[in-house]
Length: 466
Image 1 (tube, helix red, strand yellow):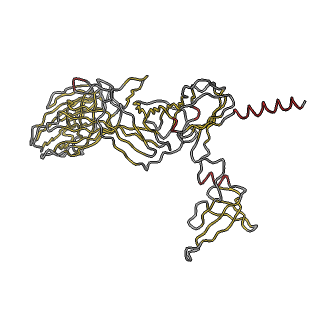
Image 2: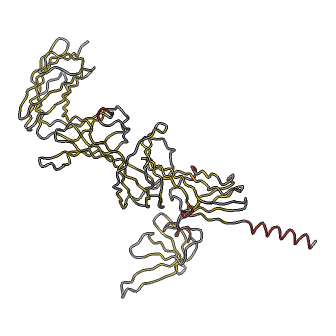
Image 3: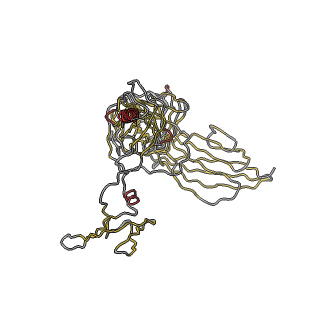
């Protein structure tokens, strides 16, 4: 019986001795890839060195994103996973307070005399909103959680609170020495596109530069990572709670010129940076992503007015809007999918210096799409509009509109006029021929000579009765 007892005991001890707790850190990474989305979301894929495992071993993975979505976690090449958990009890003021409920901590107050402090041991009873309930000398007191007078001192760090989150898993074991692969989604990862457009003096060509800003607010550093950027919109599950990313970021600008070719990925576009990049936590990094040196463009001015069958004595004075238009195709000098982003337009002055002349949002653009950017209002181009005549007709009214257009600039301008109508309409007369008509609008394109004034007259029949 003694021999049987010793045999069982030795077997249990041997089995226990074989069970290991294996810790993997960022130093064990052999490969790292981060895919950035523009919706505060990223996909982290990495490989870490891990040898054979038994079904008794526990693996602890450190240096993971603090904003990981554990429901998206996939662990491969580690055997069949039997259990996995995210240890997210990170040390913070709130977590410390909750851990010390029912325990003693120290209440400290500066008495303002020679820098001395008043220290008092109290028992933390509970937290209620921003109020702390404590027991002091057998009396229950309430103290503000955040106070300029008192502060709390915690005697020691609770064992269950971590400096950073970690991942723990167990599997049925593996015999191979191939590296394990981790893949998960995380908040705190985002990118945005910014464009700089430089017009030439004739305002008929531009240089386009696209800069990608990468934001890392995951709490970890991505070292020598393959960076991929996804342009387009995706649907995400509704979250019951969210954590706001810290916006106080250091900025690092990488000035090396990159040549990136977008690749279609499902209904999205993927841009892969050609070089591995290190992104520190809390850092904004800018990288040049796209560039086109000579894009055919058209600078024009637009004004839209509305015609109704009612008598109107108003006189409207305004300046037309300034627009920049180009086509995203190879014939115009582009022909690549463009991610959405802010576009800032610069134009040369008389001394060949570039001046900022306006900004607009550039919506994502597929190849062959027309891009129109509103950059502001013209200064040297003005319009005065009034109703010049109003005559009732048996089925409606005949309305006269006059526009006094003044171009005080030293160069010619192209003005695109558009009129919309509230009823069935018919143009009786117009100073300039229409360039396009639709169900409820008519358009004109007028070339305005430098330092000139033009009068545009329009007479329209509007039908108010069937």
